[in-house]
Image (tube, rainbow, N blue to C red; front, side, top):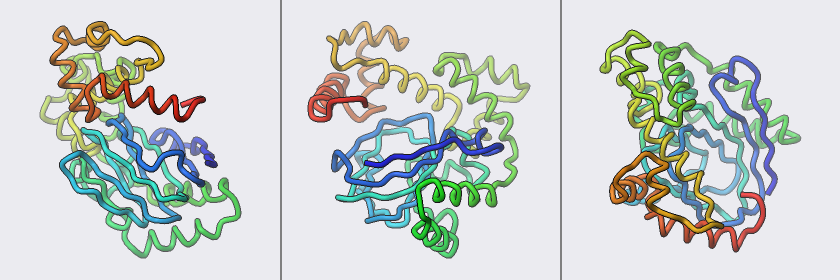
Length: 270
């Protein structure tokens, strides 16, 4: 697999973690991802891929690519034999200036890029990307498209500041304290978050907390579920198990089994 990424220039770097190019044979046919405190845009240049956003939603096929706002549950990618795409890893608030709709409308309902930007625009962009000479030229084209589409979003400063505080504490800071410091009501803060991120501050805090817990697991070592629950701030192990399953779609035991099997089948950095 070839993977090239870079951080965009200002002001996009305040909205985006990185732009990336991906091409090659995926090491796995399917990939299940728990909710992450991030937003994803994929412009597909190869064969269509499949995705299922939650266990109770049917798998959908995406040809031109997709836009995934802040998810609240695990979703699953199904890769073709060969994949080729460019994409954007946005910060939680980063997609808002490029959307013409409230982010909440896309929560756990990934949209095609055509639905977000229109068929003529995405068709032209894909044609330009497909004829580019090298990955870095493709990333430059994507960056230019994003710069052209960048718009003002009311309330973005408030949402960005509050989200950054949640990120810095892995979701452990009290939402009420952040609201008081910002000088806004709980209703106003929640509305702005749903408009620009797609979820409430409480849901984003939960995502940061659960993500930190999942990444703290070392599947190569023995796992103490009680200790893991305590580190995550849960005094009730059963409650922790329920939250973990709601977040990842798997029990802690099953998640660790899958991680161990993956490490055995794909040794090396993960």
